[in-house]
Image (tube, rainbow over all chains, first blue to last red; front, side):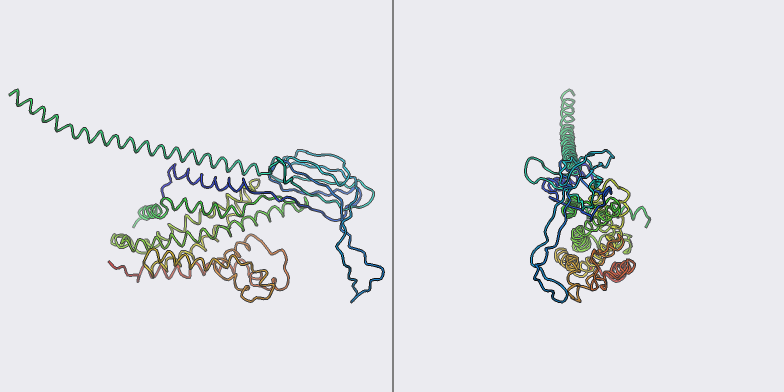
Length: 221
Length: 277
């Protein structure tokens, strides 16, 4: 298997273009949320966010819980259970929270005291674990959850910058190598053809000159 | 026949098999299929559970990348192996090569390795590259986990290649043998698209045995080696073969499939196969 510059360039170009098309169109999950039950007053809960470098995103700190619907007073139990029509009700709390966000390179991005629900805009510039510490500053235990939301409209495009860069580098280097290999082989071919032409011309000319010299010689004689 | 001559033959065979544009087509197919498994990953977990969740994400990514790469490697192996044997026979290259002092055993081994080895390395390389693109913060872990793709792809490719050789040596015509090998391997690959959890849950007995098919078994072996377990293990799934059989059992099964046709084909080609002038 002979791999020259042209083939290597073409292979890199193929991989780069496939990646580029994918990352140009790949969309991030619009929203994700994580909550872990009630947090005691003064207690801190730490969350790990595995994030690619996608640019601006919204980190939402909430305190909410789902409460099952209350049965009507005249409801009767069937087999020990009361069937209630209706969906659970979402109850929100206003809780003072101390929020700290640390980037993968250990830089504190946010260190504020907020009241839930609160949205913090973060710029995700590097890939890795962003640590979110949430401390309950209230007097009672509350459920505190962390959610990530990305705007779907507007000018902000959430694209994985590092992968995009890799695909761009692969595409460009592949294209350059491919063109370089192609031009080199064309140049070599052209040179070879020229050399062949010179050879054939010189080999054709030799007998003629020889003949002329012979003829001249015979004339002199 | 010296080792150097054998290597020279292998180089020549690889040059013939992987000539332009076969390698480029294979790379394009693998890139397109592997890209499906590389999606943007955003995950929120408890900080204390992050290392486990991170490793689980890598293993999941390795598993899904290998599963998506299986179709291109099966297609290319089927096509190239039958082309390699059937075309050489049809064009009389096999007759000429075997008239020189090259043993049939070496000839068969070289032809087989020239297809299997690059495909195995390509699939491993693609798995490492695409998984590494997302999880490059832990390169050693990615290398360590994607290493499991090597034995799985090698054994599956040996099975795939042996079927193609069998078909090529039986039919001895290029186009029909390529098409038949493609169909046969596609038939064996198809069970990998079926998710067994729901049929097992519904009580379908056939689903329990799907993991014993060659390619589905290979993916089950990879999952076992990576330590991937189903998220919900309820009684019907907990009693299924896929869940109960160990990684060793799946490895033995895959080894059996890999040797099932390779050894008979090797013996048949070196002793009994008749080459008509």
